[in-house]
Image 1 (tube, rainbow, N blue to C red):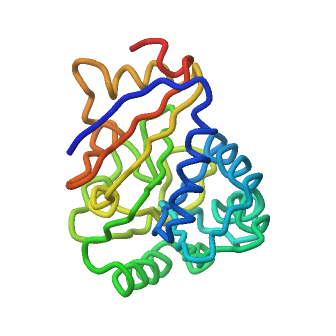
Image 2 (image 1 turned 60 degrees about the vertical axis):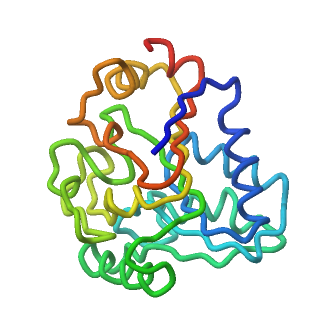
Length: 227
């Protein structure tokens, strides 16, 4: 695995450009939730490229209806997917089924299209101030899962406190390319813990190592301020 840590003046714009390139190539692209990815989706929507050959997946989802304000799919749909003239095939996590049934449903869908080792062309991650990625939280058992591709998360590690569905670390590590997008001064201390000289492997973000591809850690100046 190779990893690059890069500081950008406008990381959301860089991600929007990379998402657009992947979509136009007809790739399998994995979306994530969060305020910084939302900005990237909005910028990608402004480009209005042809996404019709692409397939969009999700790293995680809250167990709510897709129209609920807390839905990751709902956010991505409002910011980008519903704005496109030529939309992709969308594989959303059915949060409304609950964590276990929803995870089983999504894993079956992944295996049907991608096989047991999903080689996503591009996977986007964010990182919480506690170092979580997707819905893999520090100290929770889901971070240790090694055989499943998607699991239910009955108890989230932070707000909103609703059950979730998440890709597992093996599913994330199978990507050909991943971008970990982190912005804001509030995450600077955690960035230093994860990517400093002595990484704290109790934090899920420190465990993101791709088996075959390249991980780009894309930071703004504020997030990188303690490195």
